[in-house]
Structure formats: C-alpha cells, structure tokens
Image (tube, rainbow, N blue to C red):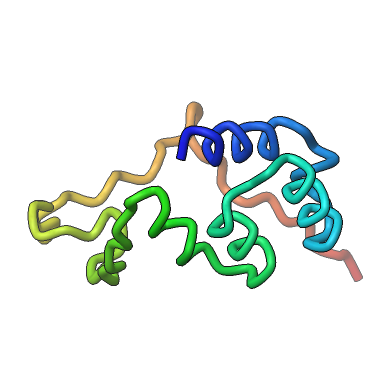
Length: 102
C-alpha cells in the first residue's frame, strides 16, 4: 500500500504522468511494479479496486436540499423599512419653457 501511495503522489506531481493516456500510464506502472489494484484502476478508469487496496469506504453523497443563504435560521424580512429617495442638494426650479411668438 505504501508503494501505491508513493506512485499516486508521483503521478500527481508529474504533469506528464497526470495527463498521460491510460495506455502510457499502464506502461509506467508496469515498469514501476505497481499493484494489481492500481493498474486495474487505470485500465478501467474506475477507482473501486484502488479503494479496496487502500481500505477506503465510499461515502454516499447526500443531495443538498437548501440552497446556500436560504436556511431556516434566517430572520423574516417582512418589516424592513424601505430607504427614502435621495433629496436634491438645491431646490428645484420651475420649468422655464419659451413660447413661440407669432
């Protein structure tokens, strides 16, 4: 298991391995003497065999019911006063329209 972890660290640290095709990675793992489980994980594109080797149990994903920011703890905002419109700095002038002379 320690060798598998070291190989996983090496794969994660080396971009050429991290982005290698499964066939290329299989050859590298074969040369490195990787475990059958790690080789299967790469071959199948499925980490189930690797989880067995490392003793990791898969945790079920629970869907989130509440959207962020909309929990039960929020206070009701029913009595919030509306902001007053801004007042002009100077008094408004009466409209000065010019009339046409005939």
